[in-house]
Length: 179
Image 1 (cartoon, rainbow, N blue to C red):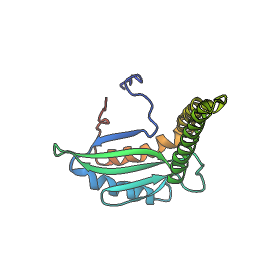
Image 2 (image 1 turned 120 degrees about the vertical axis):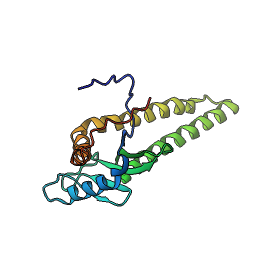
Image 3 (image 1 turned 30 degrees about the vertical axis):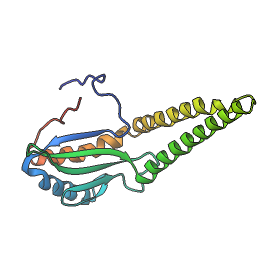
Image 4 (image 1 turned 180 degrees about the vertical axis):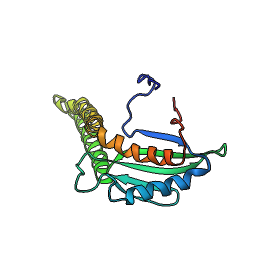
């Protein structure tokens, strides 16, 4: 077992992995489709020819539950890579982006108002909106990592579905490291 130096792999808002699968890519996706179709599988999903989405079933799903977006990519060197990205459900991701936009635009508006206050000689109390909005954006950004920590079992379970499909095709390749 190889230990991973976490300083080389900083946390990401939407973690991903890349696996070189060669000519077995579509077979692996078909295996994953068969697995999630099995009533004993802990996850659900849809799998197509070069794309798939795995998720936690609705009865076990929470607001923070991740989904695993899978895609077969043809690299420039001719290799086929299975790219997986863990993301929140689309409505949660859209909510995060909306919160970022609202906080950012509010901070910008307050800073502009603060400059207008300075122009007319009033105390520029609204300039505090800039640093406050940056702090709030940082807090919301950090909340994404807290959500990942709370759903780590679901993330590992989703990845285990992919790993079982690789084992079935006797592929034991490590993720492609990105530095």
